[in-house]
Length: 99
Image (tube, rainbow, N blue to C red; front, side, top):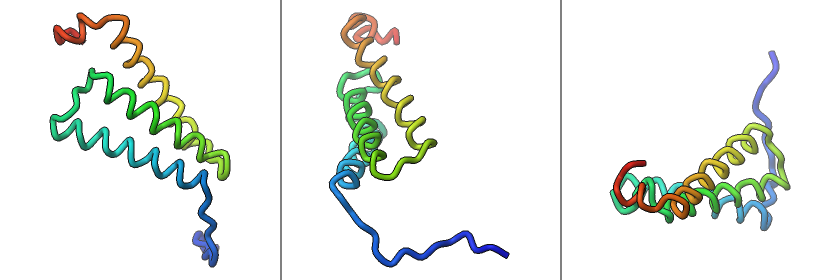
């Protein structure tokens, strides 16, 4: 039987790890504020927090690349950029609630 767990005695924590962790915090804060009705799902701030957070996670993947994490974060960025685009391109739809 092969053990799937590996014990690592010394984990190195660098600047890229820190950037990735800040990105995770931004994503979690955005989601928390959305759930607390402090942010609108169609608002600019929600999309900005998501885009910046996801981009920071992608940056952190330079050190320890993970394809699955990369794919989801790239999609997260593109979807957030769509929200930012809609905010500036169609502001009346967002204000009217026709989103």
